[in-house]
Length: 191
Ligand SMILES: C[S@@+](CC[C@H](N)C(=O)[O-])C[C@H]1O[C@@H](n2cnc3c(N)ncnc32)[C@H](O)[C@@H]1O
Image (cartoon, rainbow, N blue to C red):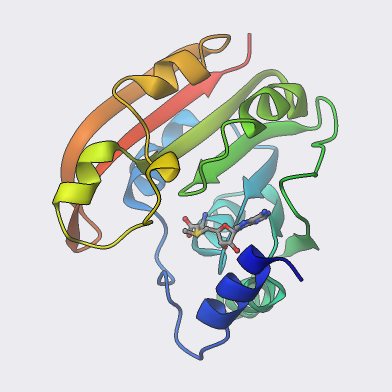
């Protein structure tokens, strides 16, 4: 078992949903920009976004390193009456199948090496929806990761996704989901 797996299994092993059952507000607000089809939710956690995508007509594969998290994804899917395909993977190694997905979601899991793999996994015209913390978040004192490598630098997503057509981008401090957070959010299309 890797250190990441142990840490997240501990966090997700409790009864309550650590990250909540409601979808990420940026995903919820922009769902109309995403065309239906096959979706992959990377590092799905307890499935708040995967389940929302399934409720909105996507056929969803949800992947994560935490089996305890995936168990909660399946429970939430049952509760909401949708189906999700959960797969236990280590994203340090996982290769996304070529041109399989219409949508790839990447929320609060910053692994820069994944971005070329997202490009490979999307069909032409497929979209990626992405959100995570920017460096300023560390000054807010509202939680989040500890290590600097997990925070985006100014405009970094625009560079990371430069081979895509950027459809929507924002960067700054927002009050969403009941707390203040400093994030970058992006929707981009594989051309
Ligand atoms: C902050 S949570 C985000 C969960 C979800 N995307 C969300 O926004 O609700 C980070 C997730 O990354 C997963 N994770 C950490 N390291 C991983 C790895 N190497 N491979 C796959 N998943 C990993 C954790 O288990 C956890 O579910």
